[in-house]
Image (tube, rainbow, N blue to C red):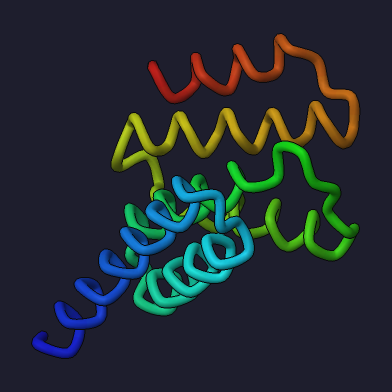
Length: 124
């Protein structure tokens, strides 16, 4: 139990570092920190920390291009996070679900109505 709580605390510290780096415009540093936090949380199946990390990671790509393998990895992380959440946290589930749908809209031309349905599923 001590090891698990220590690991969880470490991920929270790394998330804080990622947010700080992002706020200061250090996007490469932020990306690595969000990725580290996601990996640690994923290893422990800490769904809420996974969600916070993957949502932070996604926000770094606004004006950048992702390589196809990076894009596929990010969508897989979103899907894995949504499955780990299992609807247990409505707000985080909604945010991850909407982000996944927005990614599909961007890449595959999904319709905006798909995003509305994704949000409605989580709200019900």
